[in-house]
Image (cartoon, rainbow, N blue to C red; front, side):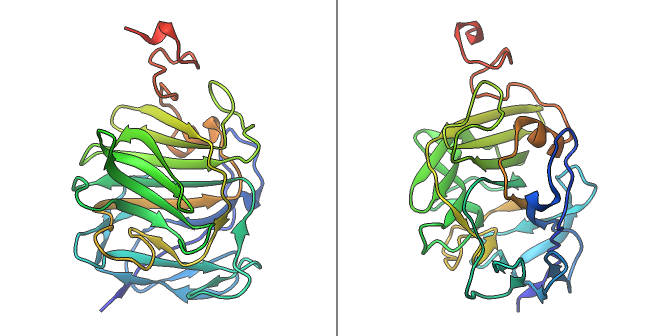
Length: 281
């Protein structure tokens, strides 16, 4: 029998070191506490969130002093995170007028992979993938990289070339900017950037891409591929999942991990903001 887990959405967050409006944070799943609980969006509708085969109240991996959720390989480990309507209301199932982020957005989460990827990919967040605005976030063994972080932008996949080690805490962020002009170390984005923060090492790695897709907040799922629980479930901890309707900058991301971190650009070993011959040891 599915359990009900706390999934809390906060309507406003002011990120330190950044000048941001309250509306920037669209959704925030803290994944703290235990059942039964409801989700609330911008003070409007509240609905129970269906959860299957997960273990709540695990040690938190986000720097907020909270808890995390353990997802297991049991053919149904997931959290149904629901759908958002155009007016900001949350609904438990699909509905008309689904809210789609048409321009800049960011998705962030803290994860810890307890079992290496084998067979199909491990997915930590997804939305309705039958549309061109569907997204899939996870890891898969690809191109010689074990647990290679990827984003699938509506059936067009981008691999970061960054592998996650087992039993380590990571902060993952996917940032989309259609204009390619947000403030980042080392230059502008092409269209999107995948950023990975290794909490143990205190270092950042990033990979840029050209994919440019809107994001439909329909039938969202944490810890699995929406409507497809066939071996793609996440194995391990997930904590503090967020969606923003803007492109988070380097300063924003560093604030979310508690400030700090070095080598923000993949290959920039001397942390001077560019990858050049000076990075060769």
